[in-house]
Image 1 (tube, rainbow, N blue to C red):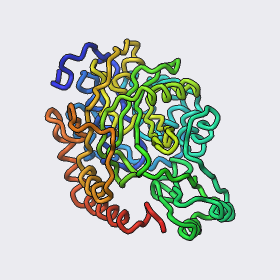
Image 2 (spheres, rainbow, N blue to C red):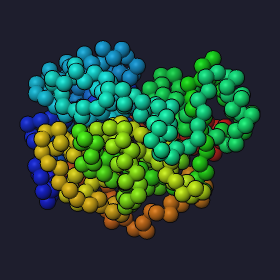
Image 3 (cartoon, rainbow, N blue to C red):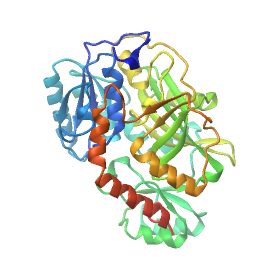
Image 4 (cartoon, one colour):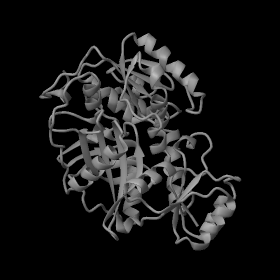
Length: 421
């Protein structure tokens, strides 16, 4: 057993493999690597869907086999189900599915009957993951269940955008209404802060006759704190593992993927998340993003990802349980040991945290709940017992990755796609 599992007071079922499922072309994904390591260190045979044989995930010593399957995420669902069943047949025994994107999570939920033979996964209302992944669907659920969220509008035409702009308080935030368009036909690239009415109308001219966007209240970062919740819920929507933390930096700045975060105890937030999940009846792993608005003292739900989050390895209990381990234990009929979260632990994504640090220092932003000193650090890519994913990441990231970061940095400084004037 690897040093990372020393003292873990439980054993996983090594006869039940895990399969990391991802659709689309995003090879530098540390969440999949984290899932492979998490269960692989327990002796669970691990498999993964990869874009090509040279992704960081495919290089992990804990991966038994990579199934190379280039997809866009926009294929006919029947074709994707057929592909998963073919992979299940090659594995040859029931495997726990671990989706790392919304497309995979929604496909699994909507095709449970076809996938139930060769795979194990939480049973959920088939329509719920798609609704949660939709910005509009999530907003409607928040309203139904009394969960705070930023005020929002969902224009159906350019005229609707014009009418919104007449009364809106700027800046506002524009996002793609559905998560599934982000790799094929996004109206905006990520979270876009729009500073003025003129800027919004100029942007909207490219959205076509039916804008696929949500226009949302802007929560100023000077008056807000970014919090995250990662959890795994059983068939009765009771938490098997539930963790809270604070996001210190993200890339692109203030609007993108977590680059640096800490585990911070927040019982109020934990209760809020557990209550919402219980009321909507979700089961399985979740990754939530919330922003605490100091102006009114409310936690406002921004994103509900019905799958494993990329930074889930930030969170592990004193019993050695993270959400992926909790999922595997539960689906294989084993108890999930209780334990407090590792308060003060931090998570760093090496390839994006440095540019994020420079951007945040320039803006003078600090996170009040981040501890002065971390109790421990989990790196997204580097691990002494599994170094090849880190080296593979560096090789793939070095030239196109650096160029991409530079372009994002210039965009941020100029107030371009993330801050339209």
